[in-house]
Length: 114
Image (cartoon, rainbow, N blue to C red):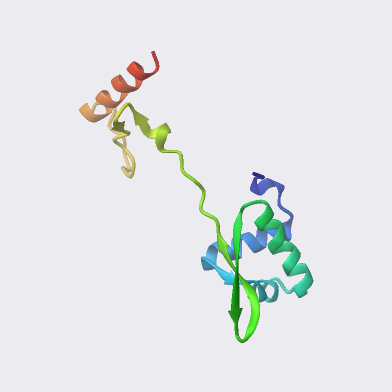
């Protein structure tokens, strides 16, 4: 899968629009980009091929189009795990390195890496 660094400026702008709106019709996308329908289709197709959006057939205002939705990325939570202990500071604003939870997590992490 390609990264966002591989996108053209128009593709990045389109991807940002799809993400911000959490989904929009392809016909709305090319209007927002001030592009032709042909250019909008090419951009949407390229983003779909790069697995950054999903295109679903839809009817909008009586016309056949595609609903473009952002693709959710699979998250790897294993980096936050030490054995069966989840890192104790997810969502915390400050980390207290003296806490028992942090110490237990570090000990479990060191046991798993041996």
